[in-house]
Length: 382
Image (cartoon, rainbow, N blue to C red):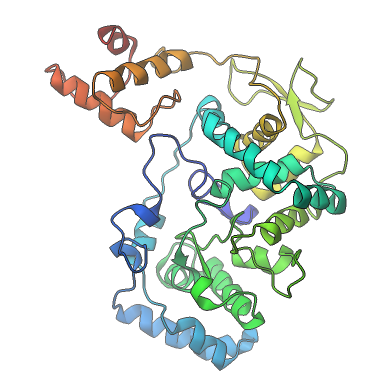
């Protein structure tokens, strides 16, 4: 994922886009009761970091930051070793489009999306009228980025961005994010206690990085603050609509659709060989400005359609490298779970939990615990 060309988001759309058998959000794994954070995302002593912060403070005034803002911002901030671990352990892992769409438009995400759409219909309609961006598209981005606000992240942004500015692979980029985060405090949009986000500094319901917050965030509620962290998602949803509107979204034009099933005229793409074809418009490109990924943009578009009442895709995908179709993989997960090897759900996506279950079953049969799915394994479970 090219972080230089979008507002931000790591992994599968930050916290929101996770398979049914993926690991739980950071806030619930091995966490401290007081902070809700695991030990490696709580500050530890680091002399190099302290020296870097001291040097940063000396040049921060050139960026328009007051000493009072710096004192407030860094009062409880510190070096977070888990941020560096996560940054350096990122791999170029690429899911098939079939898997990605299975996660992006899962039954749960569709169901919750329709509920959220209904609950905030008045706000979403007002945003569509003002910015021209389809209400369902705004809702779908919300769903992919933070699971409709359930997974906004609770890592202190000053600590995360300063840690990455000091010790990360993109120091200059993250120093800009740190400066922007401190300016958010200085502007009074949010107190430092609520300036939280993902381990990489993506914030709020729709996961804006600080520089994009500065450029696009909107005070839709009129309370004088652009509060994308609030339980009320109005400002965050408005900020997303504003982002798309200022990055090429055309009012009244669909994002695209599956070829042969009412899709608007546009550019034809087939991201997965042998899979469905899509006709996409310029608004598909606007979604990619939010996240420069074809799979992400298709995920947003398809989820938006499903939230709006459309059915699943009509076209099918070819078997995977193991010769298994999605229906095969779902059946494999169901059979493993029935035999006591929990896959964490049956969505047809073979993730860590499914591989663990496969390995457990293989070990119970005296087989090498490869954790790999196969037709032979499926037959052995029948």
